Image 1 (cartoon, rainbow, N blue to C red):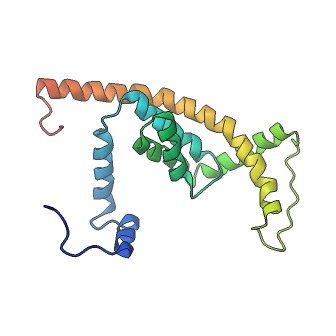
Image 2 (cartoon, one colour; image 1 turned 90 degrees about the vertical axis):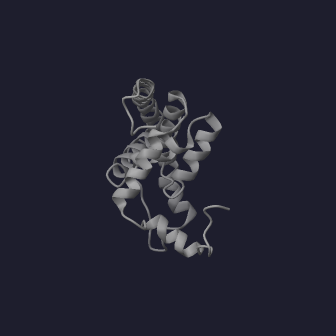
Image 3 (cartoon, rainbow, N blue to C red; image 1 turned 135 degrees about the horizontal axis):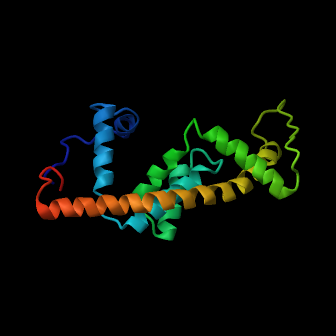
Length: 181
């Protein structure tokens, strides 16, 4: 192989590079942006994938968002790269809003609109009956919230991707953009 390493990189070193880039965060970010710009998928597929990521990021299943969003994007025919980017809508600033909103909506859907939950955490938090009293309304409530956010993100992303691809295609055909290929 032409560009193969002489010595195979250990899995620990590969994991370290995923957490902390070799060069810099800025260079890695520019690379990701460059790759996203070169997505050859249709605007519909990119917007559908991004919407799938946004939908999954509203669920309370932290740690599984990227896997679930890629699976949903694959099932509905969206771009998996865009789905992974859509999961970044869920972040430390938006998670509290998602959690409170999904819990309240889920409680209303289950018929217990008072919002009071009695938890006994003296034996630990990882008891199925203790977790399920909070997780059940959050999971149920995240569905309408996630659908609303997914529809909104689809409506915003599709025209933006379409305009970008048309602009890029026009620039390439006129030869004005030498640096963009």
